[in-house]
Length: 294
Image (cartoon, rainbow, N blue to C red; front, side, top):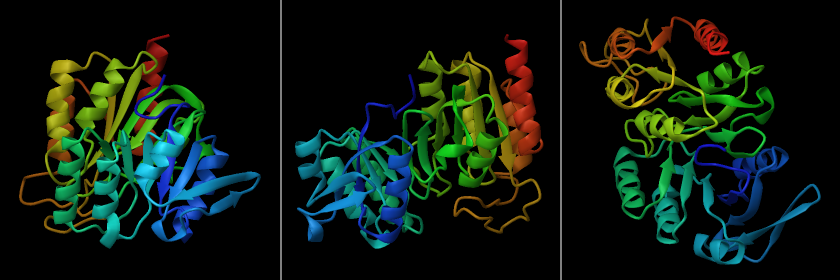
């Protein structure tokens, strides 16, 4: 089993015929993802060859769903078109929309995340690496060759730290890794993923990666305390970040005492989460806990 994305997922790629869309569609297919079509109104009716696989291009998400039964879309469109792309996918009834695009205006993100939620579409991102269920499917830009299937779940604001923890724990493996994105507004939260991993019988332990800014990690800590029975290991990036300066992600900014790495660490530890001081140290905590459970 896996969270949100499985071997049975049928994936459309909005923006497949662009440079980034082409590159990552090829990588997704190589990882075993069932990419059933692309979406580009100007190139509808064509096919794109990826090795020995010809992928059709549809004029709309609705056309793609009708023709293929797709239930996932990955969005690789420029920021100015992201809102309309997500709105179109939600109107078509897609179950999962993974928005890779970065640099989307916050007011657009607020609009389309609210719109998607109201129509029952699970949205990952924006400004995220996507998600991967190793050995089953890969929707986004996460490298598929740095880990293997296993029983650890991972939810992370940071794409780079997602990759690093996957590599650090490559001999253990993962059920699903979800990069939720680091923008101020995202469609899926740490809490959403914690709930999904708690309910997943094939996930034994969860790694939670956060960073400075906002209060998502504090809210996740309260959720762990009240609702999660599986072990959770955490890591918070940004202990040395200066106050008032955005660090990397648009949402990663400390204002006064709000959103500091120390405050997040203390909240998680108070909820029983073991928090690593470095990514490598975090991976060692996971190994220690898994050793104690065998």
